[in-house]
Length: 267
Ligand SMILES: Nc1ncnc2c1ncn2[C@@H]1O[C@H](COP(=O)(O)OP(=O)(O)OP(=O)(O)O)[C@@H](O)[C@H]1O
Image 1 (cartoon, protein in one colour):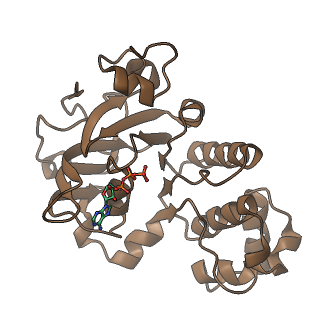
Image 2 (tube, protein in one colour; image 1 turned 120 degrees about the vertical axis):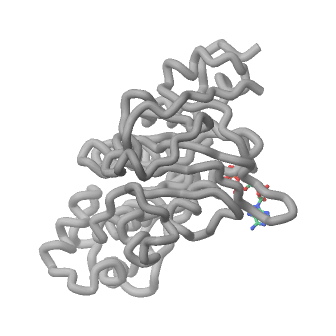
Image 3 (cartoon, rainbow, N blue to C red; image 1 turned 45 degrees about the vertical axis):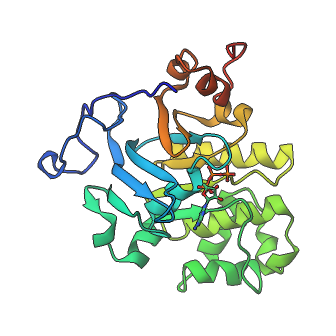
């Protein structure tokens, strides 16, 4: 397997340069500042780590698509970013500060996450929104629904009665109610039909363009090509490639090219 290893070439969005112990194993995009820094991260069970020394600078704009075969460690990596799990070794910095030093609830409010199957809490859609914002005003609740393209009448609907696509949009609206700085998305459209997938993709683009970057795991190469501003490819717990899609389309490793859906390049 060929690995792409770029030297770090810039400071993070709000990270003092002195706070970063630069390491030639960093993988970094030259043109974008970084939001998360992963430094030689090992994670998973002690006896069989899943991530095996991942170093990565996550750009602080647009959509970073995370691709890789099943079991390569994509979800494991994402769950470290808002401390749903902790690494066995290595460090993860967010905005220049180790995630272990953030208050966990503050971190999770600012680093929001959505999942393949949207978690639905008991009660109405409004009740679900109140979980995220206990001071929710009627106007904010309506705006939250409109923002994700749902009818305001759904506010009083039992959340358990929403369709899969509606539930995912509700979960995105709920996540946005905490005014996050970044959104983590773990295969958010994997169980949706094509129309709902495209709706969520459009919403993701709007959110990212509105200033909330997204780290988005996807298995769907067509989706990856529609959404990705940057791509990281994980294979067997290591970073196999990182960069813009057009760079990865020309990657030495045919498996990388296949994973990013490069047309006709798999040997
Ligand atoms: N807590 C755990 N204990 C043991 N094994 C685990 C644990 N969590 C995940 N695994 C295993 O680690 C591997 C990587 O899991 P992970 O969910 O990160 O992969 P993934 O790339 O997101 O896969 P997929 O695309 O199928 O969702 C899988 O084989 C999984 O079964």
